[in-house]
Image (cartoon, rainbow, N blue to C red; front, top):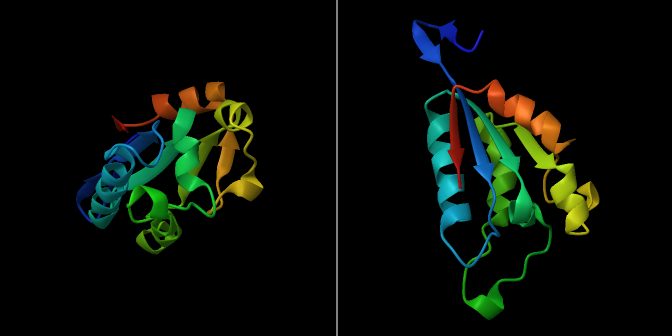
Length: 128
């Protein structure tokens, strides 16, 4: 069932899909802020990182040369907001030469077909 009753409130499944590199646009940072807002309202929040979005989770990001703050450590705080469902596209990681050891947080690696099944099970999908 896609909705649960919790203390009289409807809980919906929200999936946030991060597709873009962490810097060069506002999409990655905006996505993170929207995720935290959704979690604050006790929704069932999941994040998927595909395409260049996998770089959002890369360890040791150096941003001094682009005069932007490195916000990637914020992903480690998601667990405090009960955001624990983080998925990464295996194909996207492979294409970019990344492994789970390169990532700043624990994730569940899924094939694109498995991610598509997850997406079908959501009530709301946001793509950034």
